[in-house]
Image (cartoon, rainbow, N blue to C red; front, side, top):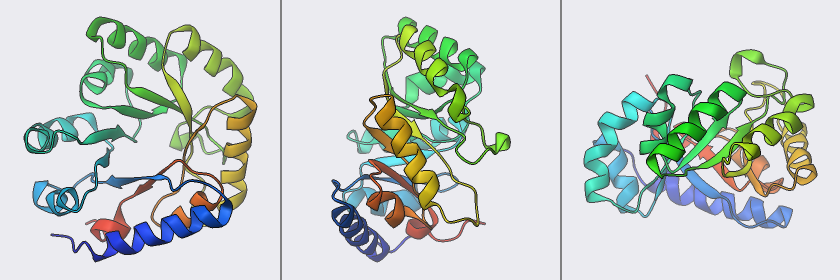
Length: 217
């Protein structure tokens, strides 16, 4: 069960970094993938409302009971999404951070139309030219945004995961520039190792896991 002391520290650092950059404090998404209710509930009790999961099936099994007790939870899908899981994702999640291809857009649009649920969507951008991570190439972003908007997806911003082991600031700055060009206000960027840099550069959502929960097995 995590100590909530790291939460206090992260919140303080996040607010200070955002203020330094002249931005509002971003939404803190606690990345709860692989953790069960016993690890999550102390954060819920401490006032955390936003949680991120990587896999639809894991989240379905975990959050049904938790949401019954904590109805104000806002669930974020931050992992890659297969098109055949789009309907399940739309039914469960409030925000989807990994929209990155036309086939997924079509599947999400169909699921939203049939269910009446319309989760916010971030388009994932491959800022580091790492196809294994998913994301649309920056040069193809305009076309994908046109496709998403034509399909009626509620696109609220851009998401990126910069390359590991490299200074992340230039990649965050690139994502912020792309968002400005395409008149989007949401920036989902920054994780445990670099959330302060992301907040300073204008992140609206940071995805923090190990710094809150400890190292995963």
